[in-house]
Length: 99
Image (cartoon, rainbow, N blue to C red; front, top):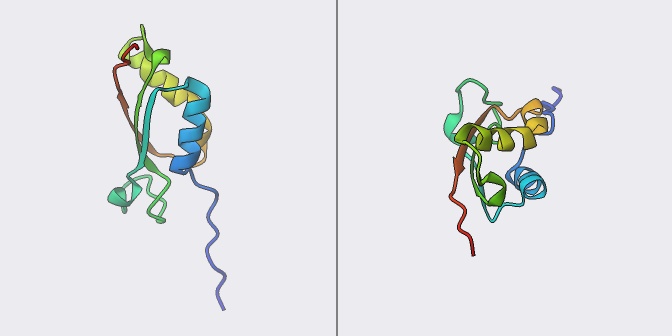
């Protein structure tokens, strides 16, 4: 009898969303796991989730920063996920509308 494959804990949309909310207090946030569309590609883990994400985010934390600096804020907040298997991250910064 074979032993089932054991996979390490992989990133989830909920965990990424919670981390970004805590780190950057965004006013707009959407995290989408696009891993299934990348099955068989580099970095895919064979599970169909947890490796390729799209983040749409906006809020005052991004005001006054260059595009590169805005993306760095997101990458820095998610560093532990990269170490846990997040392979690709598409970042869309939404303009912050002041109320």
